[in-house]
Length: 454
Ligand SMILES: [Zn+2]
Image 1 (cartoon, rainbow, N blue to C red):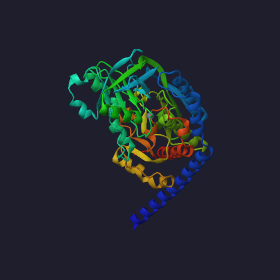
Image 2: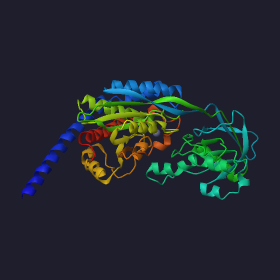
Image 3: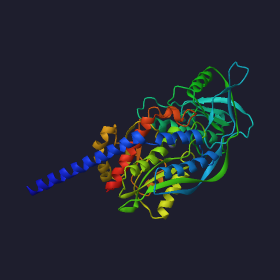
Image 4: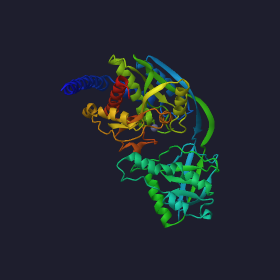
């Protein structure tokens, strides 16, 4: 009987907690939806700074912007953490195609793949050889590859409901194809963009040459151009010209931008939320990942505005160089280790500023169980997916140190239409969807910084 009473008392107290928490969460939500600054911050970042590839002048401007935005959000302390980043530049670039029977080359829309070499401004002209897949490429004779421009015509799988799965599947053509073709003596590579889009937007993105290959230029074309090139290759011979100034200039000094609210009870234990400040050098890096930056800043602003002093320190981190090196994520984890900081939880938002649907979690089962317990508190906000198991790129070095990690999961059906393109601009982000993502993050950070993580 006693045990039953105790259990009832415990239930009543957890229900009371839950009720208090749901009221606080509603208050935070109301404030973000009514007074939130994340959308205005994103406008400034996109329109006044613009795209901001690591090492660029705009990236330096973005650092100053981030520092100022975190100060304006009311963080107790804001600082910069030095990071040396690769400095790659695109310069001018051109891809021209001449189909069988045509007299002249025609320029098509193109984006070089990030980190690739160019042609030093010279024209690289070679016949195009089409392959459907990496598996088919492996079956080719070296003499059929040597001196050719290989067109990897792999389509983003539209049947996969989770577009991130599709990205993982097709993304290897950006990572691996240039290396594989270079190893076999190809002169260059064209890939069908890693894109769900039904348009002709080329998508850039990162790659890295293996030490064992002589780098060759690699470019991406949009789906319409890829369809036309596929047909032309089936019908007859195609010749391509690649001309570009892409080059790696070495390293440049840059910074992660960090702001925090000191914890009242456990100031030395940290709950971290972050996104990446750098972007590709096309579009405005609005969804990728301006959205994540302004949402992370919003977490600080909303907690401060509500007068909440978290028990654990809440830290927002704007990472530099996620796109083409991950140097910011590595520097942050190194410095945390050197300073013997304890992160009890780190969450990343780098999947677009769309309507939030859940949180991915990579941690011990008992920790996962604790966060999953909060699910009913999130259901009124349309957050229901607590099943996925992953964190994020920038916090992967922390995860390797044993830190429990997570990620905000937005509805990503449109993300890979825009990702790494000219079309990833401020106008492509909806203000309510962006704010709802900030609400989700703020509320989870609120709960973890109150109850900790066992
Ligand atoms: Zn990103």
